[in-house]
Image (cartoon, rainbow, N blue to C red; front, side, top):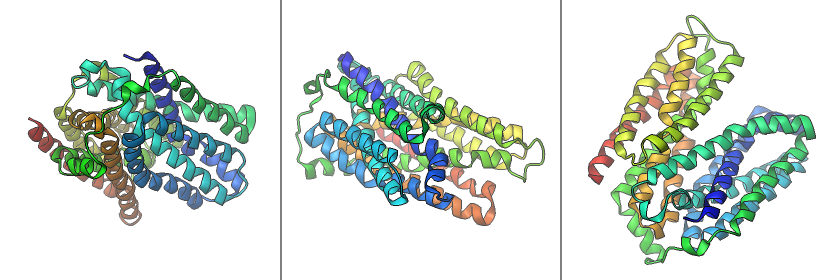
Length: 390
């Protein structure tokens, strides 16, 4: 096993997680600096999300065509340029450009790092058997980067102000690129046995690929919706008793992310050979707990339900993508990941918008029932996936 690859992958995943949490971490001071309202902040977040849908697919082709090192270097290069642009912000259009660059760079990293994760953490001869271990461990490291980012930003802003904060963060992005020069990239080259059209035909005609992608389409909105509306549910005026404070709600949301992240580490260590049965069980638990969240009228109970559901949701994505990569030929991994995130990104964007629109009319608790519907479909698809692979 290439230990330089393991080191590079570990740092790169942490930085990728940090970049994922960047906008949420700086939105308040950034809004003050640019004198923009919440609607325009939302516009910046939307640009980041929409960029993922086409770009992660494009980078999927590039990973398979020109190699993993080139795409990884390009991704970190775009992120560094984005962070330098952020450090010199004066107007909203420039902020949009910085977010666009961040989204494109992050899309490159998401694709290539998911492709390189298995070989970074598992010996070649054990890849098939321990794919779930590798993906859950990788996503644990990613999650820790995302968790630490708000703490780092808060510290740096106090010490060096917002502008220099972006420059300091850009230094983190240089580290995996430097380590990457020591990686034996030639060992990661997969012989291309199919043309571009032929490879896509293989993937798009594979029922397992479709089942994994559509399952992700319905899973990722559950994550996004709990993260977005958890504090609203915990502080809702409709609660009959023990309505908790905004400060405690924020603390419980942090616990949600910790549980979400550490459940991946637990899965990696305890269930290294996880298969669709795990997703079936977690999906069924997701149905139960999203119903309980929507029905709960006790603030304390709601808060702890949010924390528990973090542990339920955490391992689903890495286990799904482990099944996908374990099933598909390694020469098609870049394109497979691209399709996976492209389809999932549509669900990530559309379903929370639907919940938001419904919540405006009927209230968040009733709208949250849509997440239960997503959990039902996810569970059904997981059963079909299990029967297909059996």
